[in-house]
Every structure is written in C-alpha cells, then in structure tokens.
Length: 588
Image (cartoon, rainbow, N blue to C red; front, side, top):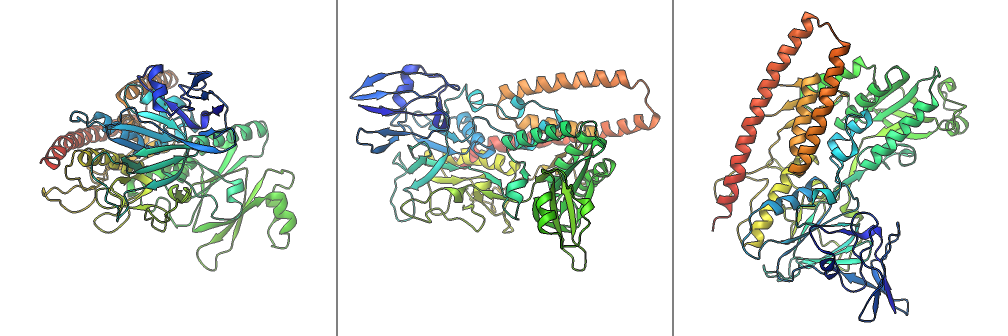
C-alpha cells in the first residue's frame, strides 16, 4: 500500500472548480486543499494507491512514498492537455500582475493559457504601504489580501509553495518548437514537479542583513509582512517595558533611502517624546537620488520630530551592550553611554567615511535595517546543467529588451529577478513601479509569443513600428507619518505635494494600483470611512482656524487640482497606449 501526503507547505487553492475536478489536477497520491485546513478527500482508494490528506504544517512531502522507502516526486497534471501552460513563480507585483494581465487579455479559441501562480506566502503584499501598518492607518487585509480572494473570479490556479530548482529545456542549442512542447520543469520544495510551456521568473528579493557582524542576529529588516509583524511586536514590547519610566526607547534606523526615511518618520511619530530615533546614512545627505522637493519635505518632518541624523557614517558592527562592555573595555569609550543593566540593549559601532573623523558608538533597543537587498534567484539549487540562466553579479537574470532571459526564449524575468538596462546602459531600479509596468508588457509578450506575433520591447529604442517603448517614471512618493507625505509627479516638473495633500495623493495613487477592481472598491470604501471619521473628530477638536491655515489650505487645494489634472491626463494617455500598442504590435 502506498501513502501520499501533501501538507500546507504545498497547498493548492482552486477557483471556480468542483471537488470532482480538483482530483484530476494531480496524479494519484496527491492532495488538494482549499482555504486553510479543509480536507477534500479522505481514504480514497485508486489503482493500489491510497490518498491521505494531511493538514500538517512544516512538512514537505510532495512525493509518493513506496513500501520500500523510495520517495518518488509527483507531477502536477494540468487540466487541459492542449492549451498552453504558463507557470509564474513569485506572487509580488511582477508575478501577480502578470497573471491578472493574462486573464484580462482577449484570446483566440483554445489559445488562452492555463496559468499557475506559485508563491511561498498565502498573501500578496503591497509593500509600499507596510509603514502604515506600524502607524495603524491601514488594516492587514487592505494591503495584504489573500491570493485566494484576489483570484477567486479568475481561472488562475495558485500554489503556496517554495521553488527549489529550475530545469529549463529551451536553452540555446535545443530546437524547441513554438507549439505546446514542454519548455522545462519547476521543482517545488514539497516535491511537486510542474512542467511548463512558458515560465515567468518574479521571485523578488530579500533584505541583505548579513553585511556587517551582528546585523543578521540583532537587526530587524523591513521588507515583508512578517517583518512588519515582528517590528510592530517589538515596538509594543518596548512600549510596555518603558511605560512610566524616564528612560526613552532608543531606535536606530540604518540607511536613509526611502525605506529608512519612511521608517524613521513613522516610528518617531509613534513614539513621540517617549523615544529617541537616530538615522544613519553613508552619504552626507538623506535620499540622495530623490527629487529635491521630496528631500526637503522629509528633512522638515524629521527635524520637527527631533530625529537625529548621523550622515557620513556606516555601521561597522552590532553587539549586545554587556558583551561590548566586557570584551571591549580597552577601546576608551564612555561606558556611561552603555546600558549596563539591560541584557537586551545593543551597541552599534559607527565608522566615519571621511578620514580624521572620530568613530561613534550608539546604544539601541531596536535596530531597523534598510540597507541592501539580494535577489532570490541565486538561492535556487542548481540542476544537472549549471549556469543555464545567465545571472549578473547581483544575482539577477540577464534579459533582452522583450524581458526574455537571454538564451531562453521560453522564460521571462521581471522585477528584482531581472537585470534589464535602459537606453543609457543603467540597470532599472528594483521598485514596485518598474515591476508593475514590466508585468503589463510580460502579459502582452506572452500573448504575442503564444499567438506567433512579434514581441514588444520594454526598454530600448524604437522598434520596427517606430514606437519608442520604455519604462516610464511616473514620479516618486513617500509617507512621512499619519496624514503626512510627499509626492513629486514626473509629469509636472518642479511640483511637490506635501503634508496632508501629499499623503492623500499618495493613497489615491496606490488605491488605483491595487490588484483587482473588487479589492480596490472594498479598500476605497474602508479608507473613505476612516477619513470621514477622522475629519469629524478633527473638526470637533479644532473649532478655530487661523488665517494662515486657510491660506495654506487654499494653496494645497490649487496644487491638488494640478495633480488631479496631470494624473487624469497621464491616465488618458496610458489608456491610449494600452489600446493602440498591442493592436499595432500584434498586427500580422
């Protein structure tokens, strides 16, 4: 008798399918799962195999276990043997929005592909708004909806699993026809094998916290939903610990890019006079690549909240205060600075960039690390043929102008997994804005490839239709706390909206970027309700308004009008491009 188990680590969320159809998607010995712990089949006997359902967490047994102990990997069976098979690994901005784009396109008969989305998490995370979780402005469901909810009205299948290795068959030298021949295999951590015709690499990146000694052990990154949970819990622990005491909570933010500045502004607003927030940056200014308006707005807010900036320094090491005092007592520092009686207190050693400047030592209760990231592609195990996918020194796949991996016509790479360069030879930034636009083009190019049409260049000079198509920088936005933010749209030169106007503009822009119409509507109603409640409370607490406040509000409304007009124009032009470009490019 053979027993097969598929635990939560390899869950499949089916949509608009009956339970009889679910069993057809796997070979005998597999398990399908809906939601969290629903058991669909129990003890079904078929062809000498017994299907056993398990909801065990933390086990990875996507294999068939034979009586002799041999473990045989199982293969995922696609519902339709004739339709193209598209596997998308990674459910961030690049992966999820590519799947939704494929769903929205109009396909010829029997050409609409079967799409399988694989991600290690059960939720899509709108990362630019993670900071609002710390301030309490948003709820988790608003910025981190479940994939099962987002894909409920689509034909996209979802697996919660980790990618273990890739085995592409479309490398140079192999003659793979453009039909539905297998383009390769994805091996999942659960043991499941997924054959595909087309593959989209959108694995994203993770925080790089192993740069200096002690950072991986003591510093908190802030790039995932789990990171936000941990930071929020740590802050609550510190708030309880220091409640009623004279000693302030000490928070150190490493890095003064957008993430570091947004974190420093959010945390300093939350702690107020109960904490001291210090921000470290290797550059001599904050936000060195940001528009001047955003930088000035950030400096103004950080100064008003008494955030201490240590510019021109980098962190050399992080250690516990007690260990630092006992093992480094010959350094010659002032030991009164170090919390001798607190075993959780940390010490950061700062090294100046400029010679002749003395090193500094900071104590901290919480260290937030926002410097560096590393793509997840290099972490995949290598198959029998190493170096099949060309990677640059950062671990990103080298792609051509159509977002296809060089030497692999059946594989697309987007977002943090892609090393695409602009017309000046510079790598495109690893931002949500870039991944969002790349997902749109990847959807178009998959449509073109499946229907034997020419592919669109995402970043290059004009193509054969004399269309210049490349990444469009729509501007830069940032949050600076509750009801405070800054936005510099690229289509109105020199304009920066800040304060309440900038905060509102940012939320509206991000609302428009949420994945589905249904989710946008629910979140929009939720935010509008919260805004109305906050406005009523504000009116009740502020019965008088100074003339200067009235004048500032009128100026803000005028800027808001300009921004809305610019956004409307940009949306209209983008709509024209969305309609015209595919029609021209896909023309026979």
